[in-house]
Image 1: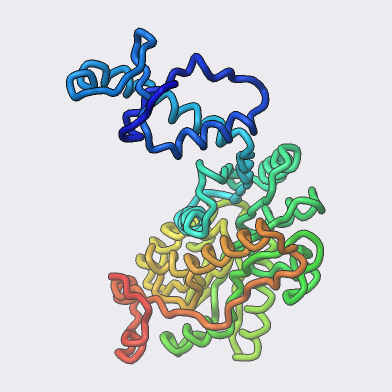
Image 2: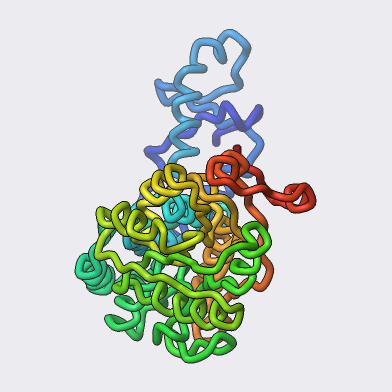
Length: 383
């Protein structure tokens, strides 16, 4: 009979006496019993056993250490046999084009999703795709996501959201940076979206933005508006601008573009026809803000936008959304869906309050004086 005494971290086990077979439950119980035994089975390489003195312990310590490590490895393996690895959540993300604002939203979304417990590359996989400004490409990307059976599809901008809504009624869709999801036919209502689609709208009352323009440039009579008629969100916003401008006794001068390369000439065509240039919720124009800024600085025509990104890149000011916040809210919605909530039950997130962003250098170059009280209330001032 083997005698035992000692420390569990130097247990010497004769593994040849343990027959490993398919009965993992019984084996696991045996190993747990051994793991809880605080005595040392003194089994030496020659098969003998006796009470070890310090000299013997020193001689055979390497053997004992290796056997102890083997014990730990097998015990861990057997303990995990009954555990099932959780599948990685598969998320498809598509944006219509790459530009600073959308890139920021994308990165903020993935970062916030990780903070909420779904880390890209670990327990989640976010496959990001860029449609390069082509609606047909956006449709192909969404079709790929559908065929790949993604758990959720995240869309950025109206064209991508529309493509997804047309191509699947089963996979949950979460949109962000969509101005008018109701007018675009993506949802049934803001409070109860219905179907498999919900998300975050970047709609902000254009009326407040026009009021800001009139406060900073009170002599305004005509507003020049370059826009892309293929961008449905832009078209829907334009209707609201025209309606409110008419109420204020203003005229609107519209210039359409087919792509971002036409934006510079469109802006130049407004010289002498408009007192200010204003663009809202148009991704085609947003990719070419610098072209509009160039024209406006050269001609000293004030340029106003609907988003902070445009102010940072050279527009005078805006009263607009915090797009980083919208990205975080979209991540929160994705988390709710992954944890069992249906998109139809999650109201679309809409913001009623905006933040003031000002670019003092742009204002000076375009002949605009910004009152001190407005500067004090600005969320951020660019110089």
